[in-house]
Image (cartoon, rainbow, N blue to C red; front, top):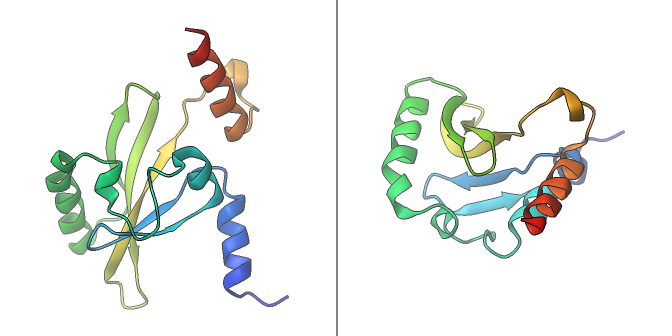
Length: 133
């Protein structure tokens, strides 16, 4: 089996969490299938990250980039009270170790009652619960 761009795309599309890869200019360069489903038209390739993040987060993101340039890897960002997720800043490096961009990694809340629930089902259940409110 040859590992090529299509194979890498399939691997990243199989990942049940969203991946929105953003370059150093905060331009969205790539989304996996989960990100496309979750964010719809709000986040688009070629668009600014600040279409979904508010501009006030820019200094925080720039600080994460500075820390990544100084060698840090994944960094805790925030606990999102509205979704219950923990969010992490993940720098992406080229073969020389330079930070070329980043993405956020989200952790869905875990509970014993739904321990074996797939992430997609988690979001579906969450959406259905929200529409009942």
